Image (cartoon, rainbow, N blue to C red):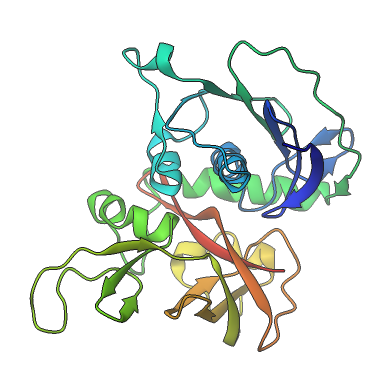
Length: 277
């Protein structure tokens, strides 16, 4: 296996056969900080997805505190170690204080490289976004729009996070359906390629954004949404990422990445967002 550096799902990345280092590209002074819709969980998922893209098979991993284990498993289909399985895991996921995650083989000594890319963020904007997320995460913050309970959210988590579709004969659909066109139950779950092209798009003004985004939309200047023709056939509507410029045009190639979407009942709802590639 070769080693190298890259930009992966909007993050900075370095790797060799024993580790994957992934960092936010954004900085405030000398400190790396998260983008507007990223955190340790989104970085951890991207790191694991990169290892899988290299051909590694990882069945179990120990996670550092600060990473949402249930979301991680929904997105990656990798089990999180507990007391009974910890010793059998070969990979550990560690987090740093500066928007950094390291996925590393256990009992291996490594020397991590320093990644030189820094995208300076406006300090006032970064503080405002962090403050908005903090308010949104309060139990008292209740959406005035579509309510999605925790159980509903968890039930559809794999379809949202891992882009899990369903095969009905020659028809491939997303999100999965419980019944086929005849009313019969079918499974036939398949993982779709998380890329597509923009068929249509719209930008919601800060005032016109759903109430779930009422605290952050004014800071972001509105929300961009795309209707994608996915490469595997199905179509879907997705928000674009908040931490990159979204000068979207019809026909643009887009990849889907796991990011924060909104918070409700003290719980962050993660899902797939688009970024132009």
